Amino acid sequence: MLRLMLLRHAKSDWSDEGAHDHDRSLNTSGWKAAARVGAHIHQHHMHPKLILCSTALRTRQTLMEVMPYLRNDTRIQLLRDLYNSSEGDYIDAIRAYGGGFDTILIVGHNTAIQDTALELTGKGNPEYIHQMQSKYPTGALAVIDFEEHRWSEIECKKGRIVSFFQPRHLQAVSGS
Image (cartoon, rainbow, N blue to C red):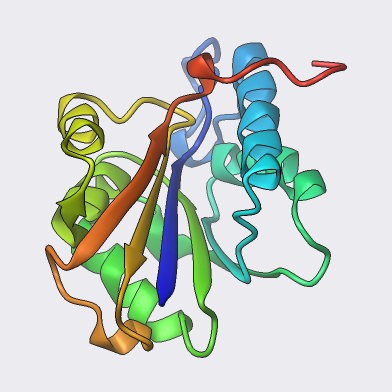
């Protein structure tokens, strides 16, 4: 079985109107939300073996807040191809980098994160699917399981959504 976790970066700061989009950082609530997501991943034992993360500053900062809650042996691959791309690009990255890893976390951007989740999900809790269709807010995480044993074998609409949560529904982490 394979598990794919799709995390949209946490809320970013729009106060610097002259900043290049790739260089926008998280805002205060984004930093806190990312830590809550990391704690939730840890509490539910959803430790990825491979992380594919966009090179954009806000995705790297989101990952930085999640990392303390993950195992030290997690491999991280930063990919510029995950910035300003489509669900097809995300699925290609999963197939290209997935190799022998059974659990992958992608930290990326909308609309590609939302479109990837919807493109790959065909089974599971209909409420999660409805929530993802309605809105995939910053910091939201979808967890999708596949019966296949290789990432190269995954197909559209064959995944089963097992979880979809948003940071605002999670308890604050102490110190945040």
